[in-house]
Amino acid sequence: MAANCIFCKIIKGSSPSEHCGTTCQRINPLSYGHTLIIPKHHGAKLTDIPEEHLTELLPVASRIAKASGAADYNILQNNGRLAHQEVDHVHVHMIPKPNEKEGLGVQWPQQNVEKERLQKLVEEIKSKM
Image (cartoon, rainbow, N blue to C red; front, side, top):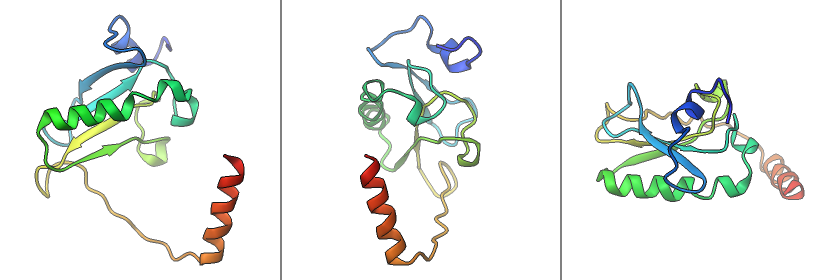
């Protein structure tokens, strides 16, 4: 836990499960039911968290999505300021998408990349895993 982290302060003392610290409704949500799933282990980015502390995040997000009754929703996890991360503690968003105006708005600006370059990237990633 980090002393100056707002999420560490929120989860301090609450312990509903081994690795998942807490869930909470987001202040100023993108839609009704926008929920944060926050692991106990403090780390700014996904790659800063040991894998054993990540195992509960998606199952908890799935249970929240089911319990919320949302027919359409986004599961989102941001890493770094350019990726719109506001709090430097890994967390997952479950964001209901009840209509076109509420929830997460996503644009996918596609890039033209040569197949050979993509294949090289795949091989590079495989070699590092």
